[in-house]
Image (cartoon, rainbow over all chains, first blue to last red; front, side):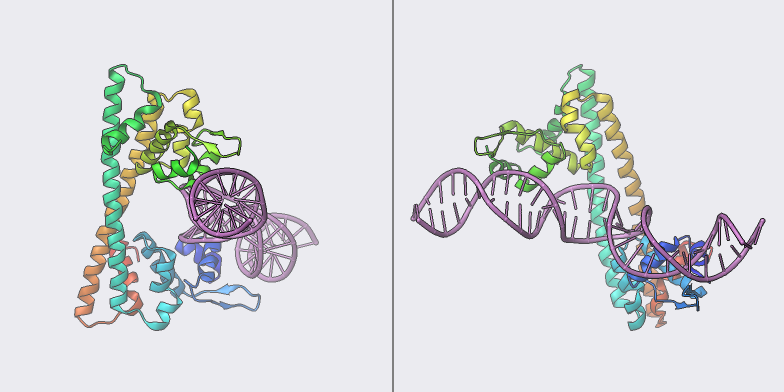
Length: 139
Length: 139
DNA sequence: ATTGACCTTAAAGTTAACTTTAAGCTTATA
DNA sequence: TATAAGCTTAAAGTTAACTTTAAGGTCAAT
């Protein structure tokens, strides 16, 4: 299989596959006498693993140690994998907290804005300052 | 007030304040005869607004139209502000959905991993492929 | 007078995950 | 045979929000 076919089967663009190879995520494939890369079905699996890890939010650097050359050479041990999963889980939870807070603040802001608007008071660019007072009472 | 004092009062580094100025987020301040930037308390307010908008997750580009030179020149209208808020709210909600899904998938993955581990089966790097099968049954 | 803190500018560096460009082979099709 | 599609490389470009660097001028205190 050449790179174009692999791209078609995985939905990952050919130049992205080369980029992954350059980052060590994908083992260097054999070359035909023309210099073209030659892949087997196994490469589809490797790329699928990368896609999965990406969907879970892992960075390519994480993925490098999860499914890259190193990982394949050493064999992937459960402890290390678990560590990565827990680390990512904590990241996700922090992000969820931050975003949940943001959502609440934006809604609160909208509410204040509507009140001001109905009162006909035109604060122009000061609404954000206003919110700052609501949220951060030191001002 | 010179830039260092403004930096101290807002907690924003002096070079970041200059950077904001270069992006048009902050109006160009007057200069002393030595060329130093001279700020008034109003600048503290502007920077506070920027900080608030950032805490809500707005990009500097958004902030530019919210509190930047243009916004101040035109006067900020409620419709436009509301539009920005709603757009950001939708973004936040999409992110929350994505992250909630990721969290569930990672937990599911951990569960599977523990099961495999207790069974003593050593799948090495294939766990991610395994997860892929669980989640994306076309393989 | 000199040391150190503070100020100035413009430009380059940082990180992530690609994408684009340039310049040139190879292969398949009409 | 010609042309279009596909392959090769290396290097530069992209976006965001800064940070760092370089090279230097100014100010306060000892």
